[in-house]
Image 1: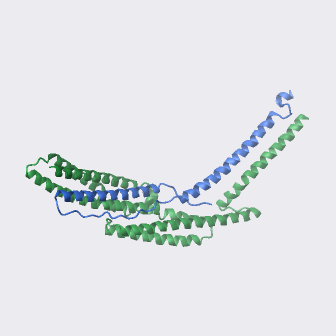
Image 2: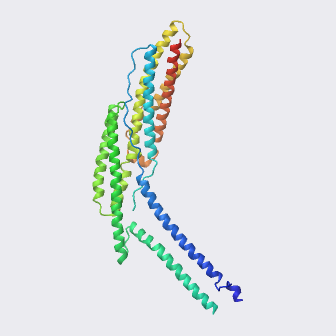
Image 3: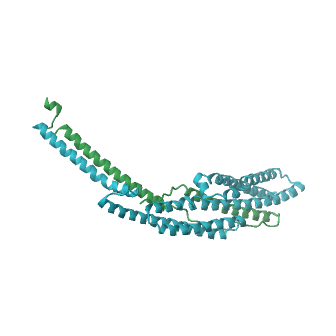
Length: 112
Length: 254
């Protein structure tokens, strides 16, 4: 009957002992995970603080003046100037985009 | 006898579990106490104070680093603004003044942070870097968006003038008996796109310019809608330019 309540292996250790050993391993594992998580959070916070804005690009002049004429050459010159100006505007738009995306990075106050 | 042996082994294992648990969690307990400013008696108190002091120094060092980075970015933005040719004088003045105010404020905040002696005070100052200035989240993107808006105003005006010049040529070609129907349709599309761009971008800088950090704190997506409008206007202008190129090419082939 005793063996029924406390079954033992050949070397004398009971199943309860094995379960307790597993519990010890589980506690150590959980503690290790908790420590890892704690440190990982600190690293993430530090990394987040280092995120920053895109460097500002060099300013480019986008002003232009239309030609006075209406002949083909003058119109083509005006179209080319407008094209250059819109390309410059695209770059400014891209910089605005980068700056806006930059705000998405959540910068946290350092806590350690 | 077996039961006695079993009880002893159980007690030993229970003691091991208790010891391991205590050893593993004790350091975290100290950290938790220091982070909340709680005091612990005797030796733990000394360790806690040392940790708090290190904590304070870390916050000050990183806070200073963040403030310096922002001031550098703001100074670069000032140079950018002064070199910009399409920004209206009033917008340029407003942005330059705002940036200068932020630089002054952040410089004062750095002095305050450096003098902090408590962790809670340093954290408050560090939070102020973000919450009260919003350099990267609001001010710099705002400056870029205003530059885009002003650039669009210039481009819309120039493309309108160009469309008028092209219209003059088309009228002359039509008067001389040329069939300009297709070209006129393309020119009309150009004009419609300029009008559409103008309706999207007009007055947008007047809406963006007054935005303050408190506005951003209330709504983190506050700039996104304006950016979308400017992007649509930009696309319209590109279509208008494409139309202009098409008509000019057609005029050459008449």
